Length: 218
Image (cartoon, rainbow, N blue to C red):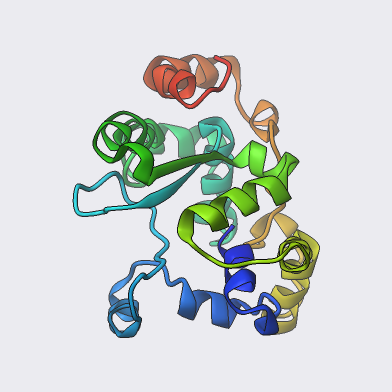
């Protein structure tokens, strides 16, 4: 989504990651100065839980089970660590990798919705994949970003996963293990190949209510 919004803001950048990161920066100490230099309204990317000082937000939620697969490859595969998914899940469930998925979801979809009302837009990752143009159009309207139908199509095409992988390869060199790529593919239902019955049962016990709140089957 961030890449596509970057294209709408500046089509001439053609989805260049450098422009996207500068114009729609993620929260970090190193980017504070860039964020402060931007004229409001500013668009900032964050994985934070709901905070009362955020006045308007687009919340992108994904099935927590698939989120865990993505986290596993981000923290383990990309770092070339030899840890099984089962061991990773045990560490995750104890908070070793930061805030748990259901805590983030519930903070936004319960407290955030209650406080922000129409200033909170919730998008499901799976809906964004299946109906990209419509979701992107609605998001641009919500954020007040001007666009045309040509720009919407360009944004979708320039943010294509294969194109982003190509850019990544050009910058970092060939990546032998595709699971180590930052752009793995965003598959849905991939968790079924990783979760055994114990992990699935434990995840549902811990995060089942958040899955239901976000509209996912338990």
